[in-house]
Picture 1 (tube, rainbow, N blue to C red):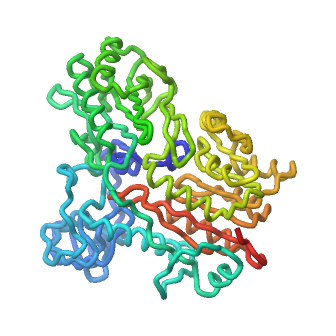
Picture 2: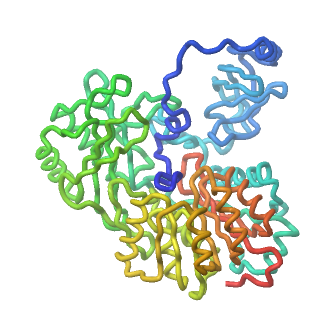
Picture 3: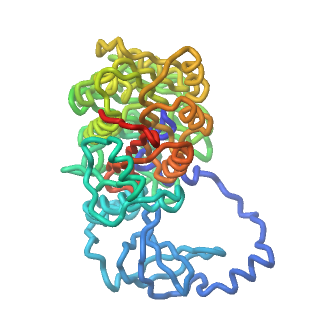
Length: 525
């Protein structure tokens, strides 16, 4: 869920599906206009040309960027600093795409991708890049967006180090020298980090297959293991696939809308070891449910929840509206830090709990809490950040537009015995002004918006409420940069940005930014 707040994170195989939407395109496309045809004819390259390229950078999709006589070509699998042989696949007026046919001079950052289906699967984009280089690129990606989109002054003249005290002197230094963008916080072991898998099901030659979508398509690559998934998830998916074969269950067919099993969703609690499996079906009736239950319980005794979700809609959305428990509990439990969370079939829970602890700890640090502050958590989801903050603040108020998420947040507060946190359903830009009218004056506002960034009215509300600090948790450097520009124009100073690698071997990067009011005498913790 990370990036719609209830669906904010992307599954490893969702990259191509979300971007392209799995649409069926007609062949009856409009012919290019005469002007467009002339522009294409005047390009320095044409389709099927073969040429040498020097790769000068990497775009947000992980594609290498090369230039032929000033014309930009994107090349899947090429790394910055490489010289390659390439064949032009497609041209547009301002850029095109090419396929790498040979590496003439390899980057020192190039490594052999360990995944056997890496070149077919669309889940990871940068396994062929060393992990240290991935972390450096993600930091630079944040910097580039802050400068290009936000037109913000970023400190680049020295190796920056984190400040333990974000005070007035730090703010003045930021104004004079620019924003500190710290080195990306990575993982000691950047594999097997995901606690949830959402795997589409299909049939090949009459046999069930379960895997991830091939790059840029809805063709499923059958998978036995995924190197960024917890091994227990791999094992449970394999068991479910085998049980489905033996019980003669049909797979859903996107084109015809027939077939039963659409997805298998599995979740594991890293700290508790508890597991959940959700069978997403194209219809209410699940044949031989007792056999499903008996086999799963026998072969995976750590499973404590077996659920069925019904989704009969013609859609790319995984879950339907109806979820029922076939056996066991409605939830599994896990911890982030010292906070315990109940995780239901559809509730959001960060997929990398190790790095979530890092991300939220940095958020608490940037909030500068002493136990006396009132904090508002916009886009609070199921209360993950709110409950972290509540351990250090006087009072926390969380708001989220999804009713089910707020119900989970309230349950999680009770689960942890926290009484200094309140949650309300609604849009942040509607609820927070009402809180202001009722006398709630926050010292700190924390935002963790979806990929599209903060609603403009929320930014206006923040500027009107004038908290001492704003902490911005972002999953999209582009919208982070845009929103920081608005807050800076409204009188805030961006002091520091900390990138965090929540999704190793993919192009996604999260970051946390801390802002203080310009001219404020002190924002000491």
